[in-house]
Length: 106
Length: 119
Image (tube, rainbow over the protein chains, first blue to last red):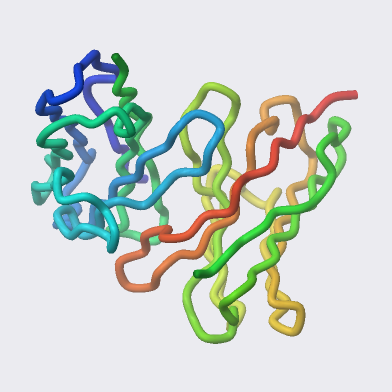
């Protein structure tokens, strides 16, 4: 199975900061990479598909990039509602796996 | 907006079978998409369990080997998960979700239900 590794596992940031989260696949996955946001006690919320395409309604401060094995999720100016845990998920094969998550905290 | 709602026992005894159902509203399962189950142990990350297309095509996480069965009932617009021989390690929040085909992302999720495995 394809393993997804996120870094860092957690990070501290302030409102207005530019935040970057990295996701690395254990093998080539082209741009079959998706991102989710999860707040405590809530279901994950879908953010980005195909590495860089924003799901409808997702604020433009979120962006994704990468291809092959290395990907990034960037929040250009962190807002109070963005403090959450972020997960990547590959969709290159039909054995879908998630990264372990990156917690963005104050 | 499609809505998904999980239901089932919140407490299951070790070695028994965990059974969950996901009721889908505002969208007909027969119209397409995959329908999947994902779980999250307390304080841990997300783990995909299984997905099913309305026609019955199934996809399973091999980590669960033959313990898991996913099924769909288009007449009731719902799909279900059965997991047998559960242990304490299966204690988790179980989410159902809609999954696109081709790009395979989960775009709509249920609120999740905590299932505890304990005697």
